[in-house]
Image (cartoon, rainbow, N blue to C red):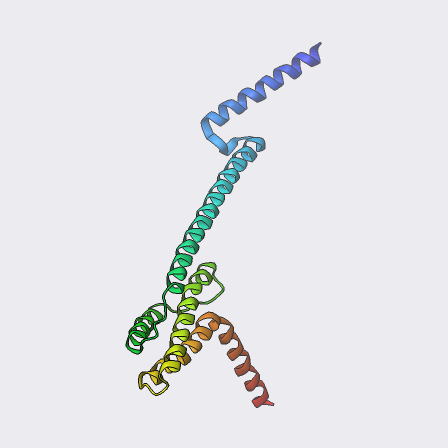
Length: 182
């Protein structure tokens, strides 16, 4: 019976000591179990925060995609006129829109979504230029509009793929320097 009572007294003493030290020192003297629970609560809070951020980001991308698709529908709904002056007016408006909406690199989800609108705008522009060329191949403005198409093709390639193009150019320069040093 002496061993049980001594063990009981020792346990009460340890527990009382932990309560007092936790009260005085907080988590500095807490048992490892208490620290683990504290860390688990922090991890749960971080996971919830991360989940909330991801959900907000997905909702933002969904909203952006919906807005872009609406704008694409508006561009697709623009009728290409068969009158020369009306077509020139349309091409002037589309030129301004193309200038304002550049392509961005495809490595970002938001940029890929925004590029859809610029692609649709550029396709409508090329269709309009083709129609103008069919109506009057001798019109002086046609040369300018064809130059805009050529520049647009280059802007599209460089805008979407400039990181890759930069890496390829860097590798080529490096290869040329190695070959030149041999």
